[in-house]
Amino acid sequence: MTKKGTNMKKLFLSILICFVISILSGCLYPQNQLAQNQIPYDDQLQSVQKAVNKFKENNSGLLPIKTRDMKTPNYIKYPIDFTKLIPSYLSDSPGNSYESGGIFQYVIMDAEKNPTVKLVDLRIAEKLRDVSLQAHIYLDKHSYPPIKKTLANGVFLLNYKKMGFKEDPYVVSPYSNKNLPIVMGNDGEFYVDYSTDLYAKIKEAKNFKYGEDIRSILVKDSPIVPAYSLPYTIKDGQPVFLEQN
Image 1 (spheres, rainbow, N blue to C red):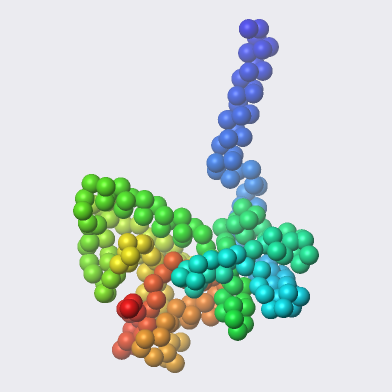
Image 2 (cartoon, helix red, strand yellow):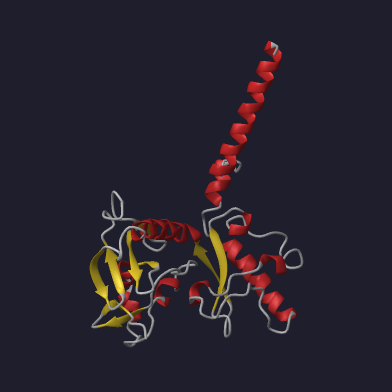
C-alpha cells in the first residue's frame, strides 16, 4: 500500500472512531446545547402546555398522551406523545425533551380535572436501572438481597457494599440538590427516598391528614415530579412511607 493510501486509511479510521465516540458520549451536540438540554425552561413548558390545551380543545377533550397500563404509577402514567402535536400544534419537541436528546420526559399531571404539563428527570430512572442491574447480579448468587435496615413495612435500605458498590448509590434531588438515598420496595423495585426533601417542606403539608400522599408539595413550586418514588404521608408532623395495601 502506498504512503498516500496508508494516510487515507488512518484518516478514515480516525474519523470513524471520532464519530462513534461522539455518538456514545453525546458529543455531536455542542457543549452549550448539551447544557441547555438539562434545564427545565419555563418557556418550553408553557409552549407545550398551550399545545396540549389546544389539542384537547380540538379533540373533544382527548389528550396527546401515550397509552400506559392503568397500574403505572401516577407520576409517569401520562407521557406526552409529541407525534400527536407536531406539526399542527408544535414545530418540534422541546430541546430538553427525551425525543430531542434531552434528559426530560414531558408528562401530564391531573389529567382528568386540570391537565398540567410537568417533567420527569430521566437521569433518575437511569440511576435506578444501574442499581437494579447490580441487584440482579447479586441475586444470581444469593437467595435474598442484603437488607441493611427496614425503614417501613415493605421498604428497605440495602447493604450496597455487599452488592459491589464502593459507596452507597444516590440520586441528586431535583428540588434541593441534596444526595438522596435509594431504597427497595417489597416488589423488588428501587425507588428514590424523598424523605429529606419532604421534611424540609413539611410545614406546607399541614392540611394533609394521615393516609394522604404528601408528595404533591414537592411539585407545588417545581416543574419536576417525584417520579420513581413510593407514596408518603404525614404522621406526628413527620413524613413517613405510606403503607401499601
